[in-house]
Length: 463
Image 1 (cartoon, rainbow, N blue to C red):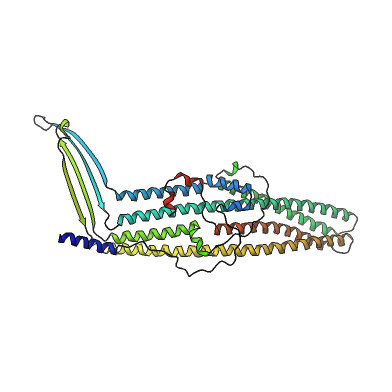
Image 2 (spheres, helix red, strand yellow; image 1 turned 30 degrees about the vertical axis):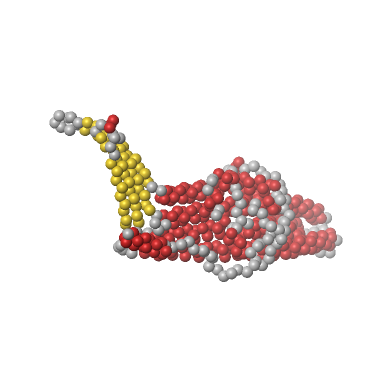
């Protein structure tokens, strides 16, 4: 009884010393609210806020057919298998064995059958929770892999949206440049007609021809850009670029009201990349627990049963059983166990600082997207005023030129400025949409794809 009491006392003492799961917080100071916020609630499928049917179809296709996303899902499936492997150590290992043979020893070669069957089982008693901590570590890594998949889905959806509106902008710029080429050709015809009557100089024609060739060069650039963006979209959709079906023309969407930013720390419960970083911290914490508990004694049980006979018919009549228990306690390992504890503790601290850095970057992305959208709207307003003034200036200079009151160089400069402002305005509107997409990407949480319905363990992964 004294021995049993001592054993129970030692068990309770070591159990009390065993590391417990701790609450983990990002090592950053308490953040204040974001600089601005809207009134509309952000949707999980954030792209539907843009009310663009073509975009909805493109993203739906990308989420199903994108190969990088599919690869990320398979990585998550592998992590689930790793959890199941680790869980198997909580149960006994049972093996069966069967042997049979015939012996014919010299000199008379008389002998007989030699048959043997047996069962063996081995089980390690998880007194200190070392195996359970290993299971928990794998479960947290599986969670991290799942959140990694969700972050990849967010990236694919955002990249698809960005490339779609870049394609819309490139097509608009190409259409505009074709109109500008036609305008410049008409002006060149007018100049040549006036040159024959001696009203202008030859250098004015040369300058207009130079502007015309410059716009033709711009057309080549935009034609190339359209094709390259279409190729990029094809890859995102899991389609060979040469098989890509041309998407009908479209316009920029009207941006909805600014979404609610919420409290900064809500991002940690919403964004999959932050949840991934947090899960890796918890996995590292459980790895450290495994290293600490490896310093405690381990208890294992072994059970074996065998039947042996020279006659197969009587093989199962007699059995031999063996039950053994082993207690192994580490004494001298050259400091290896302590070093492993120090290693896992350092990794845990590393994951904690990485988590803090990920949170800070998330805050910065929200603030960057907010200020960029605000300033981009101001820039578009300024560009619209500049374009309006450029159009009016160009009309006045054309009238002055036709009346012989001004040199054509002034008209040429004003025309070039007007055409450049038209292109800048298209580019600015496309950038505004990009900044809104960046804001949605920074604020939005995870969303379900079709693959989440294929597994049964999704509930425990989202805890």
